[in-house]
Every structure is written in structure tokens, then in C-alpha cells.
Length: 267
Image 1: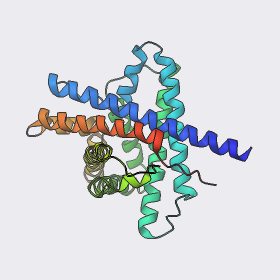
Image 2: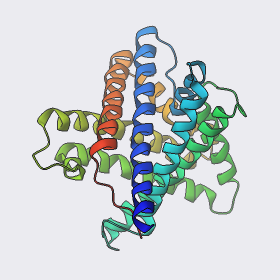
Image 3: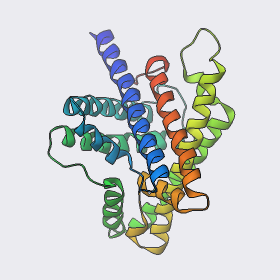
Image 4: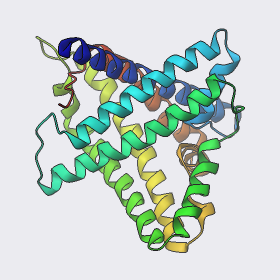
């Protein structure tokens, strides 16, 4: 029974990597289209909403919901049970806090995907930005909320640094199960993908820091706002297109992880 439970948990975690990969592929594809047309790029929630218009869209969204929940539970397991034995050093605590935040975010994404699958909500334009502003406003209205929002922004900026370092040092390759060295092209896909994701994380965290500093919830935003920031800057469409391609490569690497990632489930 214990072995069956462990295998089921591992399978759901792998489904989570596949679901994450699909979402990033969609976000990247829509961002490339936005760079070409000059439109507003879609965020991850809007990208999931696009699935509803496809054949068997509700079924696909149901699978994505299950996958994102599985990914969230696995990240929660890493944060609480520490199956990788990272320990309790300051660096390890920061990493585990990041895993906890990832679990929280992917739980919210799973809930939204589930509501879409059940048609409890309708697809929206940049819903992630609106929700980020709503909860930022609520949080800042609480005692110490401004400091907490700033702390979340710092956590995201720190996560961006960790993603960039991971890309630079190619550290993610050791997380794959392989009896032979990981092919160079797989490493390159991962490096570009992690670098693009790091930039999006940094811009999202900076927006939360700005919202906390100025006490203006409307300055907060999610992935959609980060991509719009790229679009509106110097060489905007070109830079947005490059980052969008990187996000698609991160989606491809997530699909590779779905098959080959070493998954340890906390006890």
C-alpha cells in the first residue's frame, strides 16, 4: 500500500511538471504573437482560459488542474518534509520558503483552472494582474501588511536570482535521472528557459516592491504585467519575443522533467 501511494504521488508530481510545461508553452506562444502584433501579452491564467475554447477543453483543463495540484503538493512536501535533506541553514530555509511560495501560487493556479473546467468563471484578460492588485490591496490594509508585501517581493527577486544562478551554473541537470551525461542541447534548453523565467520573476517581484514602497496596490501585477513591461521598454517587441521564446523553452524543459526529473516524496 505504501509503495502504491508513493508511486501515485510521484506520478501526480510528474503530471504537475507536464501541466506547468503546457502553461509556459501557451504563455510563450501568446507573448510571441503579442510581440508580432503589438497586442498585450497574456498571463498564465489567461493562457489557461484559452484552453476552454479548444476541443475537449474542459477535460484538458481538468487534467491541468490535477497536475498543478500535484505540483503544489510536491513543492509543499519539499518545503515541509525536506526530502532532499537541505537542512536548516539560512540558504536552505530560503530555498524551502521558495518551495512553499511555489506551492501556494500553483494551488491558486489549480483552483482557477478547476473553476474554468467547471465553467464557474469565464476566461478573462490578464486576470492574474487584477488578482495580484486585489490581494496586494487587501494585504496592505492589514497590520504590517506593507512589510509583508515587500517581503514577498524580495522573495520573488531572490527567487529570480536563484533561477539565474541555476541557469548560469547549469545546476538543474543534476536533478534529472540519467545513466549518461545530460545532452548539451537539453542543458541549453533549460538554461535559456530558466534565464527567461528569472527575468519574469525579477520584474514581478520589483512590481510588488514598488507597490509596497508607494503603498499603491495598482502598481502590483503578475506575469502579464512583467511581459507588458518588456513590451513597453526599449526594443520592446524584440525583447518580448526573445523572452517569450525562452518561456516556451522552459515549457519544453518542464515536459522533459515530467519524464526524467528525480522526484523524492517527503515522508
